[in-house]
Length: 168
Image (cartoon, rainbow, N blue to C red; front, side, top):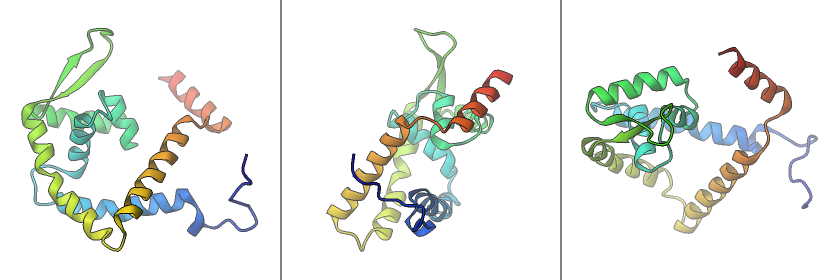
């Protein structure tokens, strides 16, 4: 095992992966919301469509988990997208308790239509990076995500989550 990089005696937010990734998200979201401000779709709705399109999510619960949103809030977004004919709900053939979300052809078209302005945004904010640096940043971030997805939950947080599930 390599020597740990982070140490308590010199740790600060400017070197904290958590702080930096949160800061990127907090700076990105207002730009993305502004891109969608004059559209008939919100950024959150688009993210849901893209998650379904890319296979990142199949269910309401998947979307809630990936968006880090309350399941009820995601249900309202999904309800609206379904009303507009952009997706449909379908019971799983293998587990009737599971309701899958399926993009309609119109939903696929709407998701695709909104990609160019997001691509333009990311090209603008990464214009000082080389292609290699962008690829490296994406690869390292994907590795960090994969590692975090396998990291056991800190004990008190895990107990609190289990307790919350048991109450429902």
